[in-house]
Image (cartoon, rainbow, N blue to C red; front, side, top):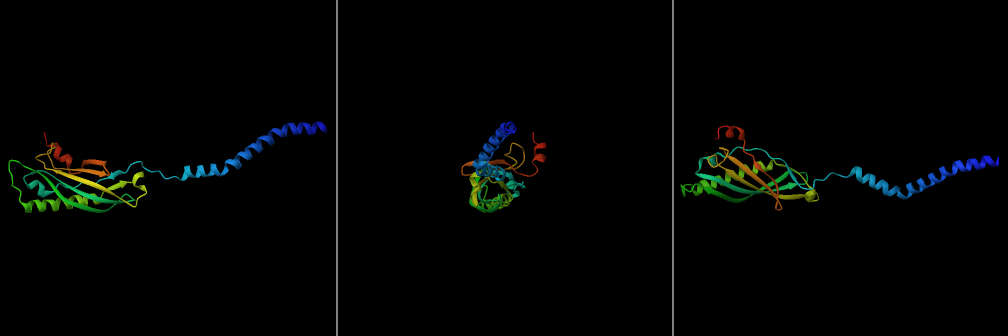
Length: 193
């Protein structure tokens, strides 16, 4: 019987030691391991930088094509919510014009005012449809601001042979997106040599 106890002890002792060490480690690391697992599984994926997801195309403003102007620029400020949707758009009421130098003073003040109103309206409606993916910098804010510069280039000045609506989205000095958003770009470039 003594030999039986000795054999049983020799066989069971390593199991008991290993079990005790494992149980002790599980108890010691239990709360830390559980927290680490929860943080890993439940953590939100956050973009490093805010990105522009979609920008709607627009028709080139008809009034600009009729005036003796090469290009015109306008700026608006957009307030964006934490969900990435534009809440409001505020025009800066400043019109930049690159006039045709061969026809100085050919554009009246009334034409410039109508042009400014049309460009502000077109750009404001377009920016209202923009969707952003909010990054880490803006994730903790309820709202953040984006400055949108719109440069409208007439068909005569465009290298593509058609009107261009070039937008630049700027957030705190960081360019989020740039591009041409004029509709029917493919139709214009087919006939340009």
